[in-house]
Image (cartoon, rainbow, N blue to C red; front, side):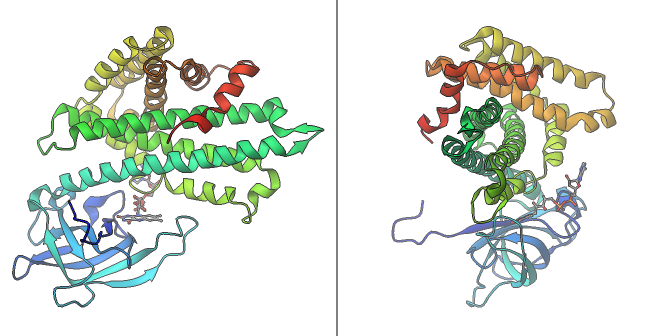
Length: 398
Ligand SMILES: Cc1cc2nc3c(=O)[nH]c(=O)nc-3n(C[C@H](O)[C@H](O)[C@H](O)COP(=O)(O)OP(=O)(O)OC[C@H]3O[C@@H](n4cnc5c(N)ncnc54)[C@H](O)[C@@H]3O)c2cc1C
C-alpha cells in the first residue's frame, strides 16, 4: 500500500482499437522484448480515457509470434514517461463526446513505447477480463449514482412545480413515474452490492478459476447490464418530469441522462455482457452457484412467496436455454440477462427486508416482481406505501 509520502498514481485501461473494441481479439498492437526487462509497444489505441492525466495505463498488445485472437494478447503496464523522463506515447487527438466530458478520452499512438509485462504473457486475456470485472462493477456503482441523483432532483422538482392547480407529485401519473424510478434504483442498488460482495470473495482467484469466481463474473454481467439499462430509463424519466426545462442545458438533468447513456456502452456493451453471460452459463455452469445462492436467499426472505416466485421465474428462464440452438440462445440472450437481473433483485430486496427488518423493501420487491417480471399492470399500491417507497432514497445511507 502506498505510504502517505508517496503520491497517488492515476491509472487507465487502454484496450480498444479502431477495429477491435468488443472484439478484443482483433487488436493489432504489437509487443517486442526490449532491454532491461522492458518491452516496446507499437500500435494505436482508439479510445484511451484518462490520456494525458494517467500516470500509468494497462494496455493489451500481442507479443511477436503469439497466436492470433484474444488468447494471444498479453497485458502490459505503460507509464506516461519513459525511463529517460520523456513522454512515452503520442496523444493524437482528444475526442469530442456527448458525455463524460470531465474525463479526457483520446487516441493514443504507441511508437516503441516502453512497457512492462504483467504476469505471464499467455494469461494476458485473463488478466484483462479480471480488470474489466472491476471496471464493470465501478460502472454499475456509477450508474446507480447518476440514476439516484436524477431521481432525487426530479422528486424535489415535482414537490414544487405546479400544474392544473396542484403539485406535479400529486398527479397519479407523475407518482407512477417516481415509483418506477425508485424501484429501478432500488434493484440497481441491491444487485450492485451483491455483485461487489461476490467479487470481493473471489478476487484472489487466478486461472483456472473456481466456480465462485465464475459466479462472481456472471453476477458482474448481470449487474453491469441492469444498472446501465435502469440508469438510462430513470434519467430519461427525470428529464421528462422536469418538462421543457429538462431539455435545456442550463438544468443539469439532461447532463445526467447523457452521462447515463455511456454506461451500457463502455466496459463492454450490453450485447457483449449478454454474450459473456451465455459463456459463463454454457461454458462454466455459473448458473448453478447462482441458483444455489438465490434459492438459499429466497428461503431466508421476508416474503417467501414473492422471493420464491422470482426464484422459480429465474429457474424457468434458465432452463429455457436447454431447448435452444446456439443461435437462438444468442438472439434471446439480452432478455435473459435482463430477466435474471430483475429476478435476482426481487430476491435480494426481499432479503434486505428480512435482514434489515424493513417492510418497505418487501413492498419494492413485490412491485418489481409484479410490474417488471410478471408484466402485470402496476396497481396503485396506496398513498401511504407509495410515499414510503418514493421517499426511501432520502433515508438510505450511500
Ligand atoms: C467515451 C468513451 C470512452 C472510452 N474509453 C475507453 C478506454 O479508456 N479504454 C478502452 O479500452 N476503451 C474505451 N472505450 C471504448 C469502449 O469500451 C468501446 O467503444 C465499446 O466496448 C464498444 O466497442 P466498439 O466501439 O468497438 O463497438 P463495436 O464492437 O464496433 O460494436 C458496435 C455494435 O455492435 C455490437 N456487437 C459487436 N459484436 C457483437 C456480437 N458478437 N453480438 C452482438 N452484437 C455485437 C455492439 O454491442 C455494438 O452495439 C471508450 C468508449 C467511449 C465512447
